[in-house]
Image 1 (cartoon, one colour):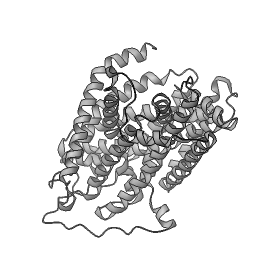
Image 2 (tube, rainbow, N blue to C red; image 1 turned 60 degrees about the vertical axis):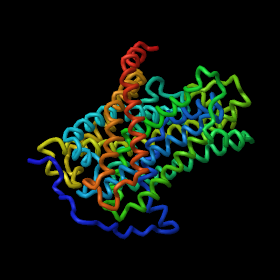
Image 3 (spheres, one colour; image 1 turned 120 degrees about the vertical axis):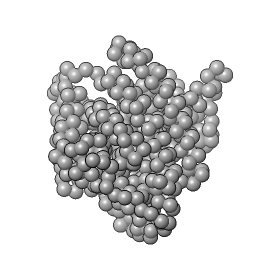
Image 4 (cartoon, one colour; image 1 turned 120 degrees about the horizontal axis):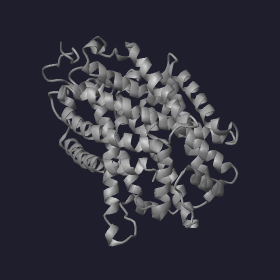
Amino acid sequence: MSTQTTAEPTTGRQQQPEQHAIPRGLGLVTSLGPGLVLAMTFLGTGDLVSSSVSGANYGYALLWTLVLSLIARTFIISAIAKYTLMNRFGDTQILEGFKRILPWLPGLMAVVVLIAGFVTQATFLKASAIGLYQLTGGSWGGSWGNFMCALVVMAVTLFMVTRRRSFVILEYFARIASVLMIGAFVYALFQLGHMDVAGFVRGMAFEMPANSLDSAFAPIVVASATIGTIAGNMPNMLYSGFMKDKGWVGPRYRRIQQLDLMVGMAPLLLINLLFWIVAAEFSRENPGFVINSEADLSGMMGLIVGPLGPALLWLCIFLAAMTSFPPQSRGFAQLAINGLHLCTSGGQKYLGGKDEQDPLFKRIQIGLFILLPLVASLPAAPNLIALNIVGTSVSTVLSLPFIVIGILVLTGSKKFMADYAVNTWWQTALLALLGVIAVVVGFQIAMNIPDMFAAAFSGQ
């Protein structure tokens, strides 16, 4: 029995269908959403720390790497969306397309999603709990305080994802959270009272840090690794499922999807820029201040804003993690169950957009991606840093080259795409460049996994 979806490719010259009308006014706000939900799942506590550390260490130099990385990610996600909307077979998930290239690839990706998704969810649940614990005083409950907050986060998440219109709830939560986070750091920048506009412009114009010739190439290496890893990151594939939740199936939704993705990624870019700018401006006045963790960020915000500063920082950390934990539980489960259906004989009856009718979907979403991550917040739980380093490194090696190269193959051929949707030469060239970067970065990570393993579990 074939493990492919049953839809047959269309034949003959295809004409691009009339596009779905884009609403105006308030209707435009409510009609968009999958892009913002996806973008906010990318935003974690790592963004808070990494953008702030970069701003503190380099000022505005290397700011262009952040912008270029997000542009690369947007391009890859747009290509994934194009396949799922405009392919010849009626596929609504990207793994269905991957199976048309390599029959065993969806099974591999499902395993990667199950392992790396659990690690990611455990990290975000713990970060949400820490943020909530600090917001509520950070001095109650003893060693069980964080765990009790994790229970609250878990309960709220279960409520959000089990409602009949769960995706609408996730959309509104992402909108509110993005506004609050932007407002918090705009207020911090206002309290600083200054910004080096000229430095910002230079930082956006491929400025390199003023360091020695021996390290002049380091920024290029860092930029290449960042662009390659972000472009081929596993959560990029969640967009197809979010589009299906919104009801965007078929080529007539391509125009509104493109607008949705750009509108959704804009707050993510703005939030990261604000983290970077505030840290860069603060470090100019306080050159001896070091930012290595969320606690250091809390201290920085306290010095900038006053007593309200730490609360704003912990609110941002809580929101950054909470806008990731609930939607990724759904997105990872969608991706994993689709991969399992594509590679197992028993899953064939659920293909063709019926993945979530399988009882296993809810068991994976709630059991593996919501309940089980709670163990990471137990008082005696081991530090998740080691697990996160190794888990994400292995998942990146296994998924990154396949994602970028798979999208290049799928969107560049009339064998898979509608005639009007095949990539232009420049789109193919850009995807090929990202593919080369992805392979190189994947190889570098693979070569360093033994050292990462040793360093992580030695406690260094």
